[in-house]
Amino acid sequence: MRTTNMFYWLALGCSLPVVLIAAGCASIKGETVVEKRDYVINVRDETLEKLYELKPDTKAKVTAAEAYGVFSNMGTKILLLSSGNGFGVVTNNRTGNTTFMDMREFGVGIGMGVKDFRQVFIFFNKDALNKFVTEGWQYGGEGDAAAQHEGEGASTTAAHDLHEGMDIYQFNESGLALSATISGTKYSRNDELNK
Image 1 (cartoon, rainbow, N blue to C red):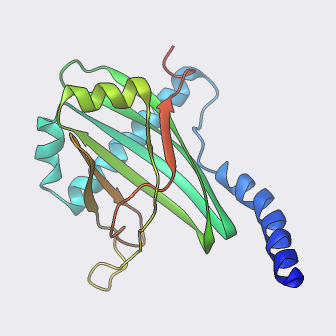
Image 2 (cartoon, rainbow, N blue to C red):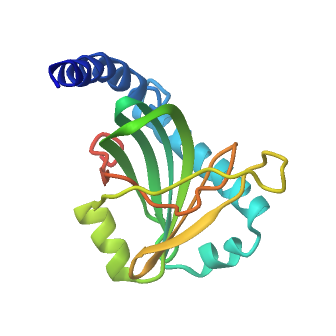
């Protein structure tokens, strides 16, 4: 029994630094606030193009929605720990205003790998939008898996209604997130870019 406990703490101690370093990989590029904002907007536009290519019906949903948010995330899972971070922007279709945001995740579980993925939130009403951009949003629990699309390894999407008033589409280059859940992830305003 002591050997098992010792292995657990050794694995945990070795995993933590690697997970924390890898979690810093998804960062906003640019030196100035303007360059960083431009970078996030470019990622938003590229992500929307990819989503519309994979799931053409989402373009009408995004256009008709109260607002939409686009996020880029890099997550790692090494042995017992998982961590990730990312960035994004919420765009209000009615006003044209943008709110730049950060995302952070941390969890515990057995596994190994790196997950680079994109998320598109579609907000169908003002309440869901306002709560998300003013209070942030947090979701816990995980249950996603990757599957190839028609054996080609192409990206595709999954939608999941996690909260009344919004849908989330999540995808990456290697497959479909079957449940499209956001595990232990916290979304909050980016103070630097919203000045």
